[in-house]
Each structure stands twice: as C-alpha cells, then as structure tokens.
Image: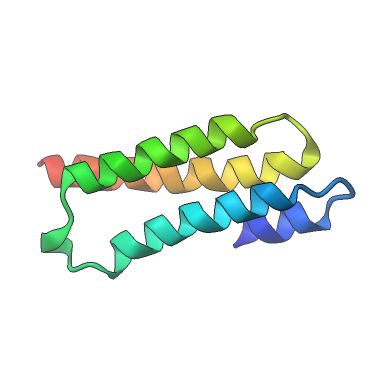
Length: 88
C-alpha cells in the first residue's frame, strides 16, 4: 500500500504501474489467505516469477516507478523467506 500511495504522489504518475502493483499484491493476498499447510513451494515460486517480471517491466528508474519497484522487492523478499521456511 505504501508503494501505491507513494507512486500516486509523484508528479509523473504511471497508472499502469499502480495496476500491476495491485495485481501483484492480490497474488500475495491470495497466498496469505490460504491455510499454511496448503501453500506449496511451487505456489511461492510462481508468484515470485510473476512479481519478478512485473518488477522488470515497471523499473524505468523514474520517481513514479521507484516506490512501486521497492514495494514489489519488499514483497518478493518476504516470499523468498516463506519459500525458505517451506523448504525446511
């Protein structure tokens, strides 16, 4: 949410970035809503792949995209921690 708010405050907004960020956060939310025993490493890997592609697509190094990309990276870090925990 912080990334979405920050991206909307800058002078050169990117409406597409907000849509992509919202879609990524919806993917993460879908994982969060599942019981932990139903989450597989493959679910996390798939979500990470989608988020990685979104990050690469949006990262145009403008102020509008910096906040969005930082939010995606933050979520990806949490998913990577979840993946490591599931692998134990």
